[in-house]
Amino acid sequence: MCLESQLQELQLIQHSLLPGESFSLVLPSEDFRIWTSLLHSFNTTTALPSLPSSVPHVKFQVKAVDEQISFEVQFPERYPEDSDVDTTQAPLISVSGEGISRDEHLQWQALVQDKLVEVQGNRSDYPIYQLLCMHLLPKLHENRHSIDTGLSESILEQSTNLLPETAYYHALLTSHHLVSSTKRRSLQRWSSELSISGFAKVGYPGIIYAQGLQENVEEFVANIKSMQWLALRVRFVEHTDLANDEHHQGWSEFQKVGEVVEEMRRRGKDTYIREMGIGSSALR
Image (cartoon, rainbow, N blue to C red; front, side, top):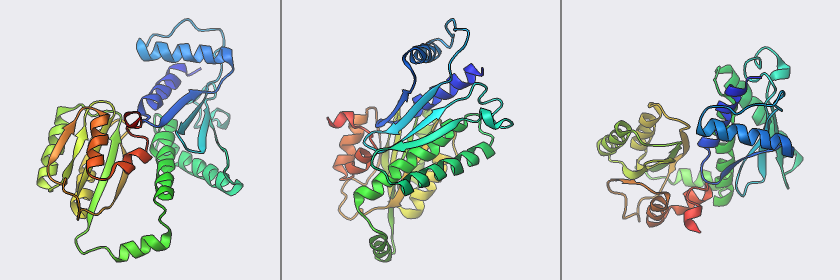
């Protein structure tokens, strides 16, 4: 059994989830006890406890809070070593959800298979992490944002046609952490060079918000993506209205998620982070 590789990938998935996203084991009680012990030992000491003669297959669920859709994954015994050459060792991934139509379920299942082929083609060391945290969970949040804003295609087209020649954009990015002094200095320098307003929340998780002229925001985001990150996710890069925003000057750093929530509230944009589950505990 490729136990250490599986534990490494499970650990990466757990540590990459943002507020509002959850990981849970879906196992019978004895199997649950075994895998809970394995994960705890691996997270704290990287030394595995004494193992039973046969370690059961692990099955787990990942979902976003308040979403109908959830994803269940089961690792076969020899995953990930033999999954490329033996289809019986490929991970099993299913989509479930309450109140979703058959067509919607089929669309999600097709998306899962399409993205799985994509990440496997990239020869990723952690294909299920890539699938869940870089594709499926962001897609869930993207769909929720579109529904909550209530923008139909016709309204979006009308809004696009009414955009002024000088278009202002804003962007929200999240990462597992932001502690590097080099990255923090780079963000400060780029924000000055590109006349970007916004902030970075340092520590765990890392949160970056930026707004300014469209081409400047897009260059700022491209600069960030060019650096090495753990679980960097671009939540959105889209048009925004700065006409009535009195707080779009300068660059700041915050230490706490609650400070991020308060700053976004001051900017009149707190709905963006609430919809994604960021800072949900700070809002209670």
